[in-house]
Image 1: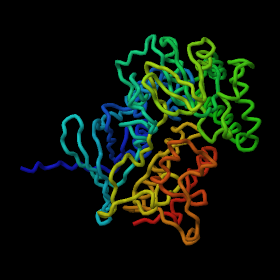
Image 2: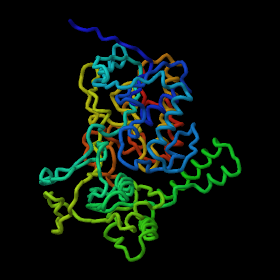
Image 3: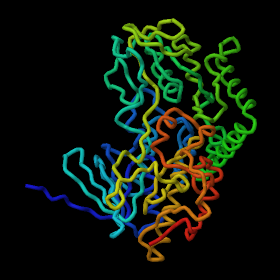
Image 4: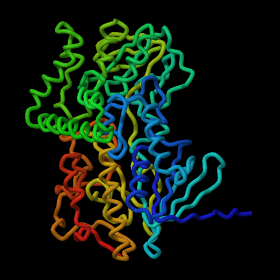
Amino acid sequence: MTRTIKTEHFDVLIVGAGISGVGAAYHLKDQCPDQNFVVLEGMESFGGTWLMHTYPGIRSDSDLYTFGYRFKPWTGTPIATADEILTYMGEVIDENGLDQHIRYQHHIDSAKWCSKNKIWTLEGMRKDTGDAVRFTGKFLWMCQGYYKHAQGYTPAWKDLDKFKGKVVHPQTWPDDLDYKDKHVIMIGSGATTATLAPAIAADCSHVTVLQRSPTYFIPGRNENELVDKLRMLGIDEKWIHEIARREILHLQNHFTRRSFEEPEAVKEELLAGVVKYLGPDYDIETHFTPKYRPWRQRIAFVPDGDLFEGINSGKASMVTDEIERFTEKGILLKSGKELEADIIITATGFNLSVLGEINFSIDDEPLDFAETVTYRGMMFTGVPNMVWIFGYFRASWTLRVDLIGDFVCRLLNHMKDKGLKAVVPKLRPEDKDMPLLPWMDPENFNPGYLMRSMHLLPRRGDKPEWQHTQDYWVEKDELPKIDLDDPIFVYK
C-alpha cells in the first residue's frame, strides 16, 4: 500500500537553520510580515557549523561584533566559543518567535521548479521518523552553508591504513577520544589547527603541528578596548554594538586594501606579531612565513596568542615538511625524519558542498549549477525564484546574511506590489561576449577547498553584476541600490 505524502505550502522555503537561515527568518518576519515561511533543517537543532563541530576549543575566527547580526547586540568577548554563539542564536530565535517556523531533522533530497505553476517543490525525509516529506513554495532561499557535514577532507596519503594509532578528523570528533598524556600529530595550518592545538596541548604529552606550508595569523588580546570603555560609561548596548561594528569594519577595510596595495609591508607587520610572542630566535621564516601574499587565504585571529604560548611552553611544536607516507608508528616525512604519535588529527579542511548536494531540476530537466552564471554570487541565470547565501572570506559571513536579507525582502515586496510570480536573472545583450570565468579568481582568493571544487560552482563574468566580488565594503553600498527593474531581472 502506497503511503500518501502530505504536502505543505508556504510563500518562502528556507533551507538551513545555521547563522544564515536564522538571519533569513528574522528578516522575513521583520520586513515581509505577510509572507508565511518555513525553515527546514537537517540537524536536530539550530546552529549549523556551531552545532556540528564539537572538537575541543571550537571558536569563531572573526569578531562577534561583525559576525553577530546587526540587529542583535553582542555583549561577550570579541572571539567567542561555539556554545556562546549557539546561546546568542537561541536568543534571536526566542526573542523573535522563530522557533514555530523551524522544522528540525528534515533532510531535503530534491528541489524541483515548475514553470507552469511557478512553484518550487522540495522532497525529502524526516530523519527522526523516516517519513517522507514534501513542501511547496513560491520562493526558495538556500541557507545551507557551503561544505559537506558528513565528512571532512582528508588527502589520499600513502599507507594511511598502516598507522596503528587513531586517526581523527576534527569535523567528526569522537566524544570518547582520550588524548591525555598522548603524543599527537596535528596535520594542517589553518584556523582549526590554531584553535584545536592550544585547546588540547596542556593535556597531551606533546602536540606536533605538521604543515606543508605556513599560514598567516593575527595574534592579539581577546578584548575590545573601545567596547570596554563605552560599557564602563554606561552606553546602551545597541549603540556599543553599532559603534564597535563600524570601527572594526573601518579597520578591516584599511587592512584589506593594504594587503593588495602594499603586501610586503602587511606581511612584515603580521610576522612581527608572531615574533612578539615567539621571540627573534624562533625560525619564523620556516614555520610562519607563507609563500602567498596576505589575504589570498583566510587569516585567523589567535586570541591571547594561545597557539604561540603553547609553543613557548614546550607542549607544542611546529614541523614544516611534506608527508612521504604513513608508518605503523606515525609519519615518515620527505626529509627522511619520522614523527611518532599515538593519535593523528587531520585538520586538513573540508569538502565544499554546492547548494547542499540537493538534486535540482527545472521543469524536470536536471540543473547543473556549473552551467549557470552567478548574479552577484546570490542568484543564477536560468534559475527562477531562488537566492543562495554565500558569505565573505575576508569579512564576517553574517554581514552578507543581513545584506542579502534586505535584498530578498525588497525583491519579494516588489514582486507582490506588482503582481509578479517569478523572477530570473538573465544575461543582457551587452553581456553576450562577456568571458565566463571560474567562480573565484585564484589570484584573489585560493584556499584548497575552493580550488578542489571550483568545477562544481557557477561561473562568473568580468563585470561586478556577474560575480561574487567578496568586497563587503563595496556591496554594503551597492546591494541596497540594486534597481529591481533592471533588464537583468526577467519577471513573469
